[in-house]
Length: 238
Ligand SMILES: [Zn+2]
Image (tube, rainbow, N blue to C red; front, side, top):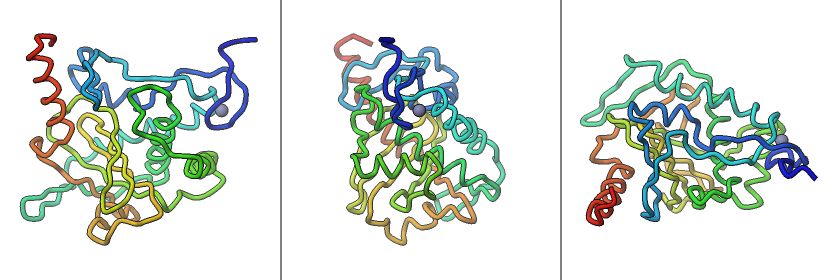
C-alpha cells in the first residue's frame, strides 16, 4: 500500500495527497521580514519560526487546484486600490467598486474548509462540524450557491503583523472565526443566525466591498502577540 495515498478531504477519493497551505503563502510573504516570521499560537506556546507557513496534506492535486484561483485573487484584489478610501468621522474604509465576488466568496469558504480539515494544532479552533462541512463541500464542488449561513468582514491595519492562528468567538450570539492574516483580519460568521443590520455595510458585498481600517492599537493579533512576546522575553527565550 502506498502510504502517500489517503482520503482527500474534499472529493473523498483515495488519492495521493499534496501539501496544501491552509493560509495562502502570499499572506506570509506580505511581511517584509517573512523569513524571520514566527507563528504565534493562541495558547501562548513558544512562537516558532515559520517562513513558509503551515501546510498539511488534506487534498488531492485536483481539489487543491480548485482553490488556486481564489488564493491567487484575494491579495491582488485587496492590495490593488489605494484611492477609493472613504472616511466617516474617525473611521476610514477602503471601498472597492470593481471586484469578483465569486472568487472572494470561494476563497473565504476554502480557507475555513482547509482550516477545519487540517489536523494541525494551529487550526484546532476551527471545526465546521458534520452539517456545515457537508454544506461547504457542496459549495466548493459547485453543487450549490454560496451558503447564506456565511457572512464575513475584512479589516485592515496600517502595519503587517505576523500571522496569528485563527480563533473562535461569539459575536452577537453568532459563531465567528477570526483569521489574523498579517495586514488583514478576517471575521467569518458561520451560523443560521444572521448578524444585525449594524454590520450590513461590512457584510453586504453585492454592490460595494468595504474593508474597515483599524488602528494598530485595535489589533487583537498585535496585543496578543506582544503579550506572548513579553512572556518569553521574561524567560529570556526570545
Ligand atoms: Zn480530491
